[in-house]
Structures are given as C-alpha cells and as structure tokens.
Image (cartoon, rainbow, N blue to C red; front, side, top):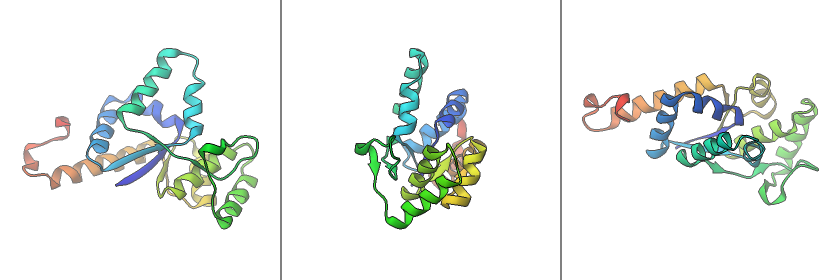
Length: 173
C-alpha cells in the first residue's frame, strides 16, 4: 500500500475533478492507496467560513477514508501536543535546519517531516514546498499531476492483475 500525505490545496483539485475522485475512491477501496493528513489540514478545513464547502471537504475525507496522523516535530506556540509526534534528535535537528531556511514555512516543513516519518509521499500544489521538502527534508514530493499519473498507473496495474482484465476498463470503477 502506498501512503500519500496530502496538503490542503490538493483536496480542492480532487473536488474539481470527479474522475480523479472516483480513481482515488477505487484505489483506497482496493487497499492500494492510503490518504493521510495532519491537524494542520484539518484545522484549515475547520476555518472555512462557508458551511457547504466545509461539509463538502468533510464528506470527501469520509469517502476517501482519510486518516489524520500526528504532526512530526514540535513547533513552539503552535503544536497540538495530543496530535504531535516527537521525533528522534537527528530528525529534529534536520527539521530545525529546514525551518531556518524557510521563514514562515514552519508548518510546511513539519508536514514534509511527517510525510517522511510516515513513509509517505507528500502531495502539494505549493511549488516552494515541493522543492524544500525534497531538498531540505529528503522526502519524495509530488504535484497534483504527478500524483494523478501515479494513481492512474496503479489503476492500470491493478486492473491487469484482476481476472478477465480485458473486460474491465477504467470507466467500470
């Protein structure tokens, strides 16, 4: 099973693309993909003022069986202690170093460290985070289109492994 830690901006992409949403539901339902978030994303959703939009996100989280995981690393004055994973000293030093190069990106660097600790790929549309996650934290980071392509490759591979795969197509999901 491949784990993906999604940044909040990716959920807008999923909601805007019904085919992608169905692809993800198919992969999650077949145990190929697991979608993760941190309290940072959950809090962003809670802060949405439009009730309908907030409910749309919550329904999507339910449909995709999104799992909230503790944020890796302690961010002073921001971390929620009951939702924080204390990390080994060497990783804490790496996170501190990454944050020192990323003014105002503390949460982003902690999200990248969380992806690394969860053995997950980070998915975001934030170009700065993509670069910094890979270069400073050393986690595999994907943008929306790279993520979508990997998911569609997983679907093709899964379908080929199923009996009578020639009778099945992506539209059957």
